[in-house]
Structures are given as structure tokens and as C-alpha cells.
Length: 102
Image (cartoon, rainbow, N blue to C red; front, side):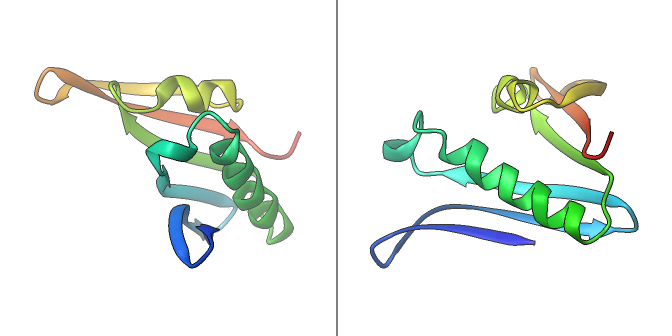
């Protein structure tokens, strides 16, 4: 699954993910600094989740560094399931999960 955010001809964000079995694994989600705060990240994530559900996924997983985006994912319905302290120097690596289908 790939979702791209374009402004004119320029790529200003996107998402890379893959599905294995009934799971969606989000590898990368990026929105350009100037476009953040406009709900584009949530829109991109929602599109990827909807496509994954259409293809049979029931659960999504993502991992992020504590200084990156754990709060963003939590606002989008993800729950922390594991944490590796000091994985990135002084920062933790956080693993999150979301049930896509009730």
C-alpha cells in the first residue's frame, strides 16, 4: 500500500505499508513540515487502513520513536502494545496496534 500526497507536481508526503495475512504494517508516514496540522496525516492513514480492510486486513501495526509520532497514532485509535527503552539513544521505540474491524 502506498499513498502519495502531491501539491502540484511535488511530492509533499505519503505512506508506505504492506499487508501480510490480515495485518497492515505501516513502515513510513511523512507529511512535509509546511502541510502539517491540516489533518493530511490522518487522511493518508485512513485511506491506507480502508484499503487494507478492503483487502482483508483486520489489524494494523506501526512502530515509532518516542520523539516522533506516538501521540499522533494514539489520536488515530492506535494503542501502545510494547516499548523498548533507549532503542534510539535516549529515546524509546514504541510499538502500536489498532483493530481495524470490530
